[in-house]
Length: 191
Image (spheres, rainbow, N blue to C red):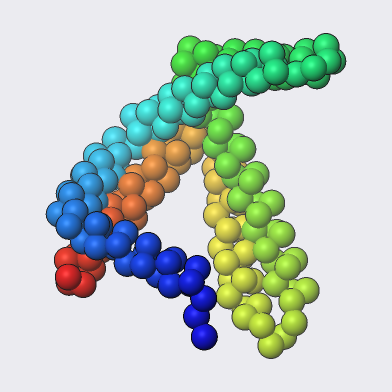
């Protein structure tokens, strides 16, 4: 038996898909733009690395400004000072990223490698602590691949800092483009 909320949710989803169906061409076009941007990133991974670092720097400045604004909402001086200090540190780090994007790429690449190592190790630990009837093999495989990728990045650090972030950006853009294109064509077929 379905409830009224189940029916309204399905109707809402159906009308949303119908709206997307009418825009399938724009969704495919967006995917093509992503694909082109991904191949451009592959064409110059060093420039794509610098571009990704600049985007991270801009996000740090925006986050820092939000922290500083949020500090003025605090009721006590202690909390105000901590939030304001964090905001200032974010803003300063963002501007330092703009001042020296290659050094920032070196630090971000090391952080990425360490994060992948930690994530892979945690997934492996979780996989071997799962019950044997669950799909622990896939979790273990995912953890092993992530751990290996992190080790490869750290092993070639800092030399790979010039290209690794740009390479990841290119891969991400191409995968996102392929996803948008396939979604657009699936919506076209559906209607």
